[in-house]
Amino acid sequence: MSDCGTRAISVIGFIGSVFSPWYRWSGRKNPQNHVCINVATYGRGGRFTMTDRGESALRQTASRLEVGPSCMRWCGDRLIIDVNEMSSHPMINRITGQITITPSALTQVELPLTDDGAHIWRPFAPRSRITVDIDRKGWQWEGEGYFDANFGTRALEEDFSYWTWGRYPTGDGATCFYDATRLDGSELAAAFHFDSAGNARSIPLPPKAPMRRSLWAVKRETRGDPGCNARQVQNMLDAPFYSRSAVQTTLDGEATIGVHEALDLRRFRSPLLKPMLAVRVPRRSKWTFS
Image (tube, rainbow, N blue to C red; front, side, top):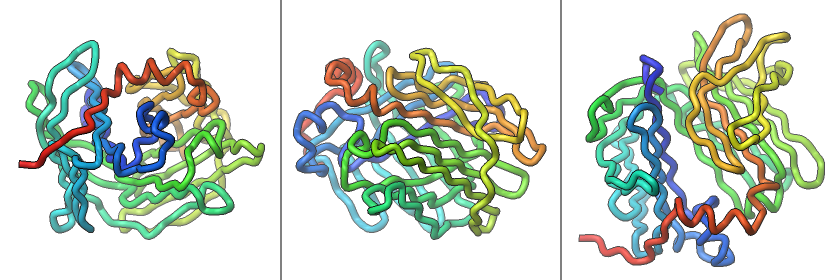
């Protein structure tokens, strides 16, 4: 999120593109044949790109993930993301540029999201600075950044019906909340605070703070001080099963704005949704590196 609060960006690298209808239709047998670097920009002139690419588009080392024309690479203590993607309907055009993430520190935290460890959340850099240089007027900015990863050996909808996640910067670091309802009815509820040196500690869970539903009526809630009114301050991504937004809440008396996500996997399981997603997520199976 930009320091001025008017711009935001998210970039997700997928090996096994979990929200791709093409990956689902393939039976999810070969994650390397469904790879993607998804770029979404929020604010005036924002665009959404998510191209499902085949195995020939993937090159990977310990410090580099390359998917077709875009890549993520570590350069010393910085994560550099070079993007060259085409946005989807209805506003089709190219997004090129570079995003640099500079973590204040890297953590060693891993949170299993299921008892058998089939799903893992790994918050690498809960507090970072981000520099954005996109080839579009007004898209050169700096702000508050974050870097994490999720790993899984089963489809999300096989184990979960609903989850929310939120990451909020605070004066001395950042706080993350993870709440999920599993298909067996059990609940995950976790809260971590990270200081600027990357030290993590589990903290008592503040009460849930209900929010208005998204434009697609996805249920949303986060956490905050007793009696606080959490509210959306910027809509980012709104889909029939998913919501991403900038949300203001209060933690230990401190008002903070962070990124919040809500995911309704009961809706995502619907086969009727997949053809709709295919319009937004084109498939490009062939790629040749020059």
